Length: 153
Image (cartoon, rainbow, N blue to C red; front, side):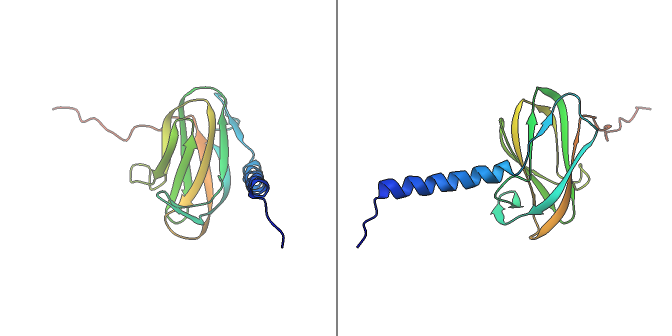
């Protein structure tokens, strides 16, 4: 009967798991984002395949998109357009954030503001199960304010 040495088997299995997860991340090339976007909005597209249930809806195990912010940006806006009820999970230098659609954003997940340099893994998910085509719009243009100030009479 063969004996297995756990000190040899476990590290080999761990190395294979890490190599496969690194390979999955390598399949998504990072998009470089700096103060000069090639187009505004920059549109990235793909398909959400939410096989993992999370607090941010059904998301994939690996990021749908990766952006590399190369310099501090005073303003950047990410918006997801998709069928169903899309979500956006962002894992970056400032932490992990779940963005859900609301009436203010026109029922689209949207996050805007200051972005620090770093690598951001973006998981486009959905509150509804299934696969949906999506568009991720990246913009540096600020939206006009919806708040109208009434003048006193």
